[in-house]
Length: 302
Image (cartoon, rainbow, N blue to C red; front, side, top):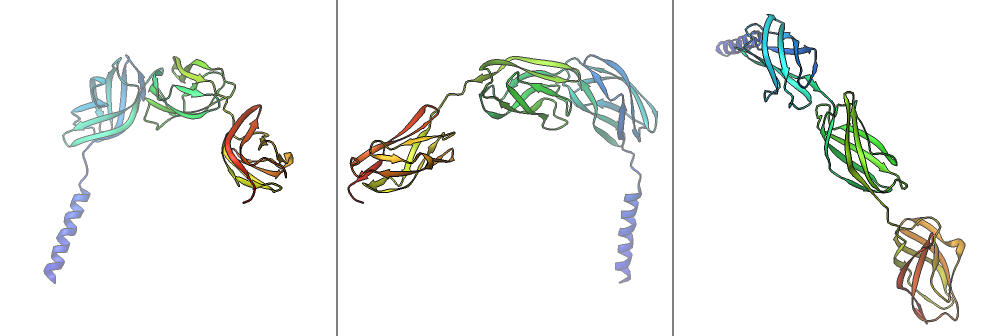
């Protein structure tokens, strides 16, 4: 039992010793100034801790920002002179400080800023009356401070990056008016540093006028003298429809009811001398008629 307690004590002591050993790995907290533009050379001050013995400083991976020189001022401060290459991607960069004990990284502490650019759209056409999402690909799309436009007749409901760290892609929700002028139009993106124009990148297409489509009628059989309600199903049912079952079948005009864009209900009466056989059922809306051929039948008996 004493041996068991002694082993527990040694384990506790070991854990305590490990946990109590101070870390000498650099901790990067901030940088000032926190932004710069392409082609700029500037002095920056990095703050944090455990900077004594620093061997290397880097701004982002891939050597997109050159560290001309750096000086360790104290345990908590490094001063560096940097040059931002003209080809560097816009957006946030990590700051990496390395000493003999390891590497500390300050995530997204420095931002390369600049005017936006547009390279492409995931969807380049939209029809009058459409609500759609489009992904704009380019750069310089800054979170919370970027706006966009698709020209007159198109309302932009949202113009937002996927995340604050993604400056090269933006999701846009647009609503194209039914009266928007068909044709090509420019797409513009604006951030605090300028505006980019994608000339003729988006095209509005005209909405084709499609009449009502009659797909089925139920019930689809009646005898002379019979009356009752029928359900007409199809698509593009809007407004105030009129319904016809041909000669010998009267439709109560006041009974025609638009249930949805896919269904109309009506009350019909079959004349005593209505002709036997199949007949077309037609729905007319706004002067455009859709016909369901041979969809209703008058029988001598059921």
